[in-house]
Length: 286
Image 1 (tube, one colour):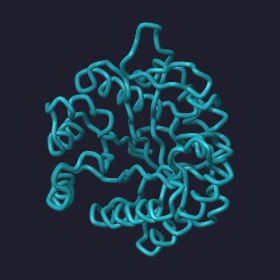
Image 2: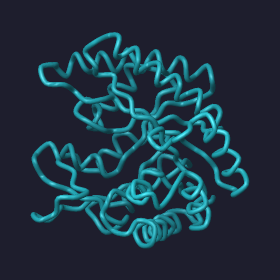
Image 3: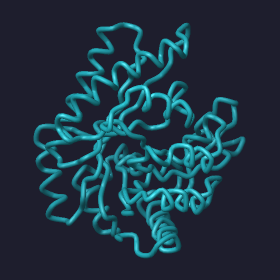
């Protein structure tokens, strides 16, 4: 397995103007990551930056395993879903340009007044069309466990099985399972044979006073992002499951807490990631 850094981990310094796309790539290389995860939300001049990012990664020796977009196929209006599908296809094209074999996608947000069955059908239909387009360009879509329609492991599995395409697999987000009341280890075991990317995210219970970087679970419990290994997720058990499954893909760090990301949280999380992989099966690059 190899270690990547999601640019989302540095959302705070980017928003403060402390870091741009190229600064992020330089930072990831300097810290010793094997690759990076880029997201659509961070482009400021997409046409110029796609080519520039690829060149900078090549110069720095960074791989680009995944490009991430935020799709919402639960729109009740068909024209809006068509727009989301067009966005997915554009994402596939950008992933191709970047040389990224994976495109991370979401199911979307279930709106009030619409049933789970309606949402499930919309997601399956959209992802089936999207997977066909992606397959024609040798790109694999990776559906993240996120939200009320694709948040739990059985929901993600049902969508992937219904689409029935090798071009649709799972992005296992270790922290998100807590938000839907599911044990991350049990969920990882349930999806292990479909995993093509892992978001390494740790969460802990938020204090009563905390207001920033707080994520609400479906049961009302409040969580906050923490450094890998310092929260509620049992990463040793999850990595062991992945190793037993024969997973040799990427662990992409997604830090979502309030600590100093560049100076503290990301470096300490990477050290924890390397230690996990060392204990599991030797050097992380193998």
